[in-house]
Image (tube, rainbow, N blue to C red; front, side, top):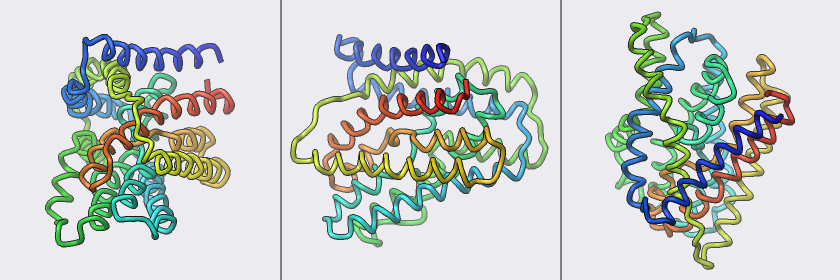
Length: 305
């Protein structure tokens, strides 16, 4: 337990360092664009590639991909039902922020520090289904509600999806594994070296993004999304742990990652749908440390480390 607490504290400490550096003037909110590009376009794809070094695909991974897709779809369906009397922009805010998981910037580096590559692969496969939703379908649904179907095209959906380097990395590596094509060791060695920077950069980025200021007018919606995410995660976690077929470790990991925080680009999507971006930004900032704490508690309770 001491080790898991030490590592979890290390993650929170790095987030605190990022926030402190911003408050001290060394970094500004605008610097998140550069750091986000470094993480999402370089270090995170390198982590994904390195995790496929010894990975052999099996049928269970198809379940993980489907689960990443289904959890998002169920959350969106529930939100559509509960928010049917709200204004279009409010409904879009709920759809974007009550579904989807920030696997790449938060959960993957966190879980990677505790588990071997074969266990981390479960997280990666879940994120494939998750990425299909958050980078394509979820935003499309939100846009359809606020702007109408004439403002959304298939080309725009595919452009959004394939502009995500983590998603492309997953797609390429899964295809290579399926075809039993092994990359040279030097590729994995370089990917591992570059990917080692991912955890630190991701946590510093989260700290810089942390913004505690909020408007009172949106507190109710923020609170509703916060509670809804927590309830949905608890239900998914219980069902996955007790009823999903597969090895115990497999189920334990999946039951933890459904507590992942909100997607980091949710504030951008929220603004595009006509809702207050600051509400999504503050909610995002609050969910990050909260999710890390819950995942740490679950690691201890489930005796995974």
